[in-house]
Length: 200
Image (cartoon, rainbow, N blue to C red; front, side, top):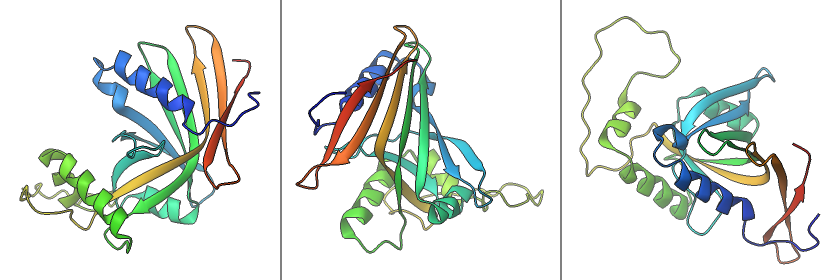
């Protein structure tokens, strides 16, 4: 185990490198997000990686406030991301706490993050938040045509998930290397990372 805490997240560089080397593959930005269901069972789905928050190791995901994962995160705010890069044979399992930023949030900084994320999304992506309530039975009606004014801010159903990692399990199947990154808070309250080589 490394004796010294590392302020910046060393695993983030591994992800950025993997994203770059797999950038020709559209699916490299798709990640699996597992939460704890209200029944205590795992609940998993594929979501889109929307980037790291500026100058941090926090991962951003856009989602619909009406989706089941929001209710699950209110029940238990912990989740795990599983991210596999098919060209470089690298897997990241990222454990952490999730902050849900919806339109009812009172923090102006978080509301700005939500707004910036909305405007960074394509019009097609924004339109999905105007559709019928996810997971409810389809009534078989003709799909409604929705439109969105490109200059209008986020609709009520749009929210941002911020995953704040505390443990990252990295596996490289080409080199047969596995590293476990763990965070802790130092005496100044800053997050520090340590890494340990473990058996694949």
